[in-house]
Image 1 (cartoon, rainbow, N blue to C red):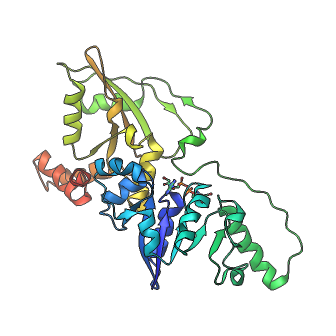
Image 2 (tube, rainbow, N blue to C red):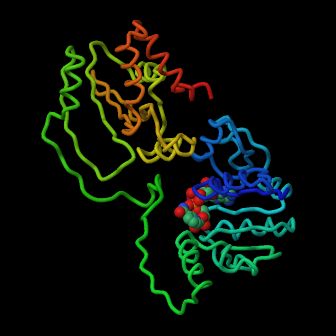
Length: 342
Ligand code: NAD
């Protein structure tokens, strides 16, 4: 069994770890990261299927506070493996290389590193033989990997003289807030149908609202200003939201910057299609305004109606006449609220 470690548990590192875990002739010893990212939080909530190692002891406290079990340092991991897959942020791999060299270990770097980090710039189909027995390989970038697959395929059969390419490049991965936001907004006539619908279901509450369409796909955000019959403090609101099994209270501070963070987190949890049944409310969005309370909700539009539809079946079929027993049954079968126990 070849023992493998992964440094950098981000977009590529997570998928590398999963890929290694599926290889029957390899053993994934562990993964390493430097900070408590959402991917690391998801790893913990999934029950730590992979051992996690710390790239820097400076951040140990951060991991302990988040209750994330640590199996050792990156240096410990390097000593336990035959080969490291380095998927750290571009440029970090070159620094980590010193560690790999220190212990005489092999390593494969990703596309963000400079070519001179490795002995061979490698592609499994196009120049496999060049990589045989080498200590350091560097993989081609995502675009190059796919491009070479196609060109090599034709080249080996027909021979190719020249290629001219146009790349239409995705601007960012889901959740890459640092790459900026995109394009135009469109406004609907007020009041929005959601406010009217709320009044139909809850006629004792007056509601109004404005809807703005935005060019994103990973969930809606609703801000709510509620005027209560008696004062609700932020603490009161938090306790109520936390006790609700279809509401997940999240923190900006933990990396939940917006709708795409939640979509990415659902995918990192391994939820089918990146679905989330629960709505999320940002702790830091809950705020008093005079007698009113204001907060922001994330709506994962593709999955949010499923639980309530299940409740509908229970109601329509008279499977349960007690509301709380009915929703509790739905929640139990859909695993809602389980994140609170992890
Ligand atoms: P990412 O930012 O999603 O992940 C990088 C991870 O490395 C983060 O979790 C970060 O916390 C961690 N990290 C940073 N410094 C570290 C250190 N010193 N030790 C351990 N971990 C550390 O980045 P990514 O998109 O996964 O990119 C990783 C590499 O893969 C880059 O070289 C990139 O160019 C390449 N790549 C990315 C894509 C893509 O589509 N995202 C595709 C192909 C190749």
